Each structure stands twice: as structure tokens, then as C-alpha cells.
Length: 253
Image 1 (cartoon, rainbow, N blue to C red):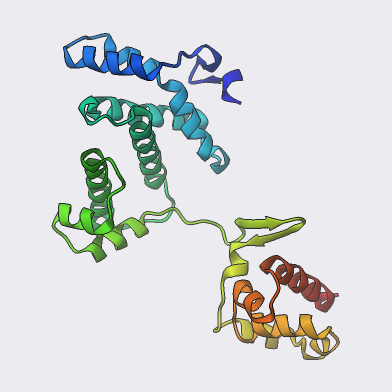
Image 2: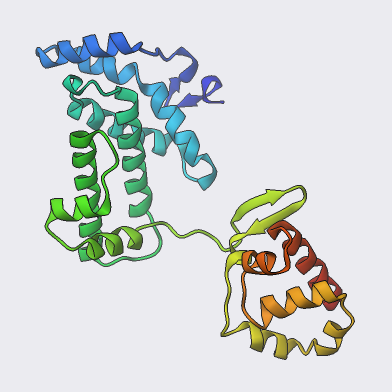
């Protein structure tokens, strides 16, 4: 897709892709003080940035903005990469690029998070990157907490606080024509019972087939999720979703 368009004025079809041996040689030249090696490494890995930002293409963000942010992550990866660790550069760079893009998206998050929690989260992300470079693997929460000299609970709370929320109508699974949304996997024992009472559908419920009646009862009286209902009556979650929608449609009609 991006090979046929322009991103930030760059004709992506003309971008050069460096081989691994070429990258290593340029890193050696860069370490020896070459002023052009870093620029060649950046230009030779721009397609890597393009491949990463495709993961965020459905978020409605400006692709030019994401590309520029991704390039910042690429430059950080180039400046911090150690060829002596025998670690593939693209693997390391992808993690850095994704991290930079996620930070950008968090900063533009409409939900406000306190400065202290946000600062802790950013420090945790920096610690994660440092540990990733040191260990050549994803660090655990415990390792990040020890690195920062704080409790692991503080790390978890901070990182969860800056995760971008998703819509309850976000599709999570699809089987044929049956789509399961986030809201289908949420059980609420506090409001569903009142919802049924307000609609006064007791008589309509009696006219439903037994299986559909059982599903509505478990979902809207007992507050169970579709997954829990599916396990209890021995059918797939997609089938529960379809039967539930049919039952609700019949009740509304």
C-alpha cells in the first residue's frame, strides 16, 4: 500500500532497503566517527518505519505524523544499538519505533491522567527500553520495578493508566456473519436487571424458545458474559451472540 504513495513528501517506492551486512558495516563506520553513516542508516530503514505505522492505520491518525514520530524512534534505535550483542537491528528498532508512536498517541489521549502517574509511566517505558537493550528480551514488571526502585504495583498502575481506551463496540471476534464486540464480553449485575424491569418484557420473554429465554435470563438477569453463557449451555460464543441478537430483536418487535 505505502509503496505507491507519498509519506511526508517521500516517494516510498524509491526507498532503499539495506541488507543486514550493510547495516553492520554502517554501524561500524558510525562508531568510527563517520558523519554520513548515520544518515545512510536512517534512509535505509525508512521502509521499516512504514511497515510499523501500518499497524496504526485504522486509528484515524494522520499517517504523515505517525511516520515522523516513527522516524524519531528509528533514530533513537540507531543511536543506542550495540552491534557487539549480535542482536538483529530490525527487531530492536521495531520495538523502539512502536514505543515512540505509543507515547505520541498517549500524549494525545483525551482522557486526563495525573502528572505524577504519567511521569512514572514514562520512566517505566524508558526503563523497559534500557532493560530490553541490556537483556535482548522483553523485561518483566518485577525487573522494571527493581530498575526504578519502586513497587511493581506502582508500575502496573502507571502503565495501565496511560493505555488508550477502546470503544465497547470494538469488534474482537467474527465468525461468519456473527461479530462479537467488547460489550458482549462485559457482565454487569447492577444495571441489567433494572434494564429488563424498565422495558417490562416479562410477557415477551415467555414467548421465546427455551434456549433463547435461558440466554436472555443469564445475560440480563444474572449478568453473565457471552463466554460464560456459551460454556454453560455448551455452544460457541458466536452462536450465543446470534441467538441473543435474534431474541432481542423479537422482543423489540
